[in-house]
Image 1 (tube, one colour):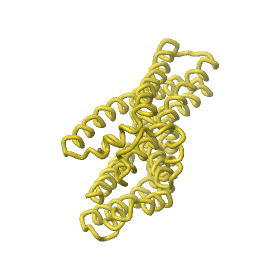
Image 2 (cartoon, rainbow, N blue to C red):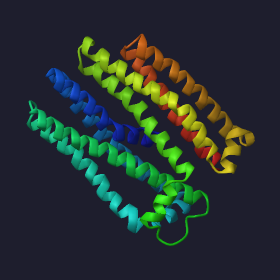
Image 3 (tube, helix red, strand yellow):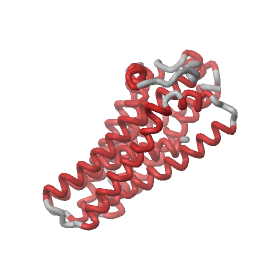
Image 4 (cartoon, one colour):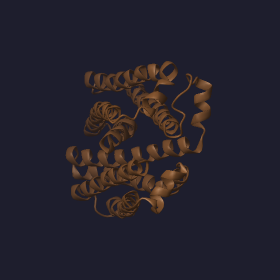
Length: 297
């Protein structure tokens, strides 16, 4: 589950990071930056495919465990959201693939070609961020709150459900996590592909984006936690020692992550430091995911 989430984080925000890198390359006519933008996009596509596979496996595990509420809630959106969701996923692949094909075919693209190809990345990233976190947040909310059974939910009803505090905070939480994961992944790729002087700016900006996103998670995470069902909230706050311990360690790890990111942003822009930050952010995702899952038992 945690790897699935991290993969979707990078798949969603990776194309947006590639836009920034490609734009910097366009200003300076810098071919290595163009190559880095393509690498970030390729890795975003790979993360997307991996996340889809892990999501399917996770769905099979849920089905095998006998928990049918999730699938009952999913069925309420089949005609209005899920069916078209497959087209949205295909749209993401088409946009990302279109950018990669275009820029591979035309590595020295004109200014307008660069603008149009970047627009494909913008569509890919924003499409994924807009459609899927709110949809699955609503499905999970209905599955947990005895709303799994019922008639098909139309678009207007879905928009009303999207406006609930829990769905809003979870969607923003996912966006911030996507920025953090993508900032660090982009920094790691820059260290691998660019000269030290060129990589330093990308690393500092990527780490700074991750730091700002992680700092913003403090109020957003608090709001999201308070929006949880009362049973889950009590389990996190002490009723269930396993859930509480996991949650506490996750919070401590998140504050340690801020420390690591601050060092990476302002002082040590090295591969070792970026690797430490990546390991820490993935650890936070694993711990938070485990805490939330245990709190639902």
